[in-house]
Amino acid sequence: MIGIISFPNFPALAPPSMQQRFAMMANGRVAAIISATFLTIISSLGLYTNISTILDNLKDTLTLAPYWWAWGIGGVIGSFSVGYFIDRTARPKMLMAGIIAIMALAMICIPFALSFPMRSFLPFVLWGAMGWASQAPQQHERLRYQPEHDAAVVALNSSANYLGSAVGSSLGGIVLRAGLAPSSLPFAASCLVLAALLVQCLIMFSKKVSAYQNLRNKLIYEKQFFL
Image (cartoon, rainbow, N blue to C red; front, top):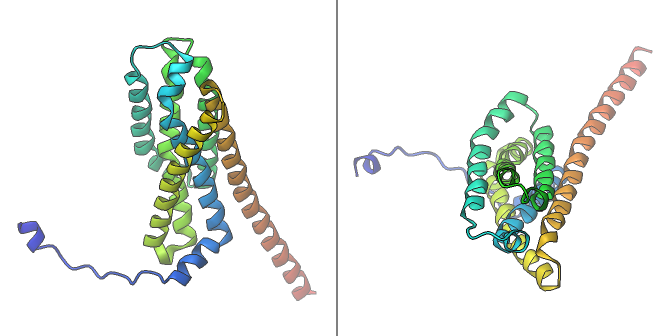
């Protein structure tokens, strides 16, 4: 009660208008980052929804709890460690590309690793860690491109996250009902992750091309000026 009474007043910025929000989503770089996030979450949380079906199909096990634990422990590790790597590398786009690549590899390895008792948990740990770590680098980049609308950018990230979760869960159920074997679901999910990796590489490549063009234009201008 004392804390509530003495809580200071913070000036609140006016929320962006609907026009500004649509303009934010129409920004090419922001849209590309959102697309990579959306594809990553579709595959990660979509596959997560069907863990029990996959394990029942691939492995005769009495309990699924250890695999849930492995995924959750990986998530905790990824959440707590990704900030350190962002600060350490100062290259969130490159870090995100590595996160996506490791996630794809972890998903591909799930059907094969289940044949080895102790190693079968490793793909789940890596998958959970990369899935939970994938949000921070993207958030960092979105805030970089839209610093004046930080709250709206955070909300946009959350929307992409929850929408991707819903779409992934629905998509997993649809393909299973259509006849896809549960054992093939990790491979299907990894294809979506690789699509996200392609988008992420395009983001990285486009910035390099833009930087090269800016440098080239600057050199041409200086050459004309001095001549």
